[in-house]
Every structure is written in C-alpha cells, then in structure tokens.
Image 1 (tube, rainbow, N blue to C red):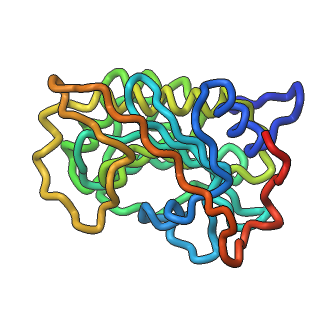
Image 2 (image 1 turned 45 degrees about the vertical axis):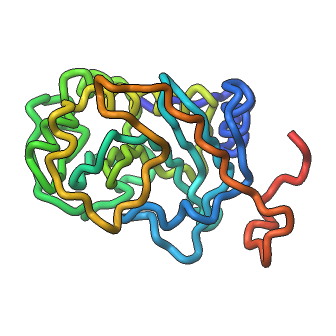
Length: 247
C-alpha cells in the first residue's frame, strides 16, 4: 500500500521541510558528507547530493531523513536511525517495487534467506552476511511493522538501520516519512541486545548518527548537531535546486 498526501500534492522537499517544522527538528539544504556515508546502491555516486536534510530525535534516539538526489528522474528518500553497535550487512529487498518495478539494489551483498512469514516472503527477499543477524532484525515486532508499512528497501549498514525508496515522481506527506521513522525505531528497539558486540567492527563503517548507549545503561543521548551549511559554499552544485526563500 502506498501512502501519499493528495490534498496539496506534497513533493519530497515540502514533506521533509514540513516534518522538520512540525517536530521542531533541524533542517539543512544539503550535507556533502551523506552521499558517501553508506555502501551499496544508490550510494557512492560522484554526481549525487544529499538535500533537504532533516535531523532530530525520536524516542530518545537520533533520526535522519533526506533526499538523495542525482537528477529529475533519479531521487531516493533515505531515512536512518542508529544502532548500539555495528552489525554485518542485512538487506530486505522488495520483490517488486510498487512504482519502478525493480528494487533499489537488485544484487545486495549476502546470502539469501527465507522468511517464515508468508506475507513478508511474498513482498521481500532477505539477504544477510550472517543468519543470526537476519533472525535478529526480523523479530516478531519487526514483522508486524513491515506487514503494514509501504514496500521499501530496508538495510543494516554498519551502525545504522536504513530505509531507502525511489522518490522521483512520487508524492509524500510528512506523515509518510514519520511512519518510516517510527518503523525503523521499532525494528531497531527489538533487535536482541546480545547480538551487538558479537562481531568485529569493519573499519570502513561510518560513525554512528549519534551516541547510543548499550541497552540497560541508556543515558539521554546528546542532540546531534545539525549538518553545517556553508555560508558561501564553493561551486555549489545544488544552486539550481535550492529554495532561497526563508522558511
């Protein structure tokens, strides 16, 4: 099921900005560090930019949402929440994208696993570098969340849990992005604590979105600093995209 706001015809930029306003979160026009933060499709492209970047906290944990932009026909909504520690790569790949008829990454890294939930198995293929990670991420509450959420790519990349979906020519409301944030938070909260710390960290993994204490020793995390926006960025490749009207 695809959720859209049809009353005003939100585009993704408007939805992200309105979400930041509604929740009192931070907003930045762009963040040059994000396009190369993660591996796998669609990340790592030299011609890509992370625009309309929203950062805040939900349920005591940092959250991040932005548009990964290449051109008018290649855009993705990316939402991320941090994990307490890094895990081997995991991907839940849609069997058929509701709009583009193909997943974001049709050849993800890892072994293919079958899910015990028939409904989830009809919508997704599970890939993971480790079977325990696949079982830990797809806990009972996660399965319930995934059954009701619109179909997107779900991933574990290093110390972050991600949702990635094609966004070109789609309409969004702030509630659609918030639903993904809530889903990621519930999935992350249910991953067994003993799974973290079992694996050797991978040096190439990026730093986490923000400080996350091991379960049982949580302190109130510091609010992450909003991505800095240079006053006069050199040769800004997004000049044609940015809205210069104050919001």
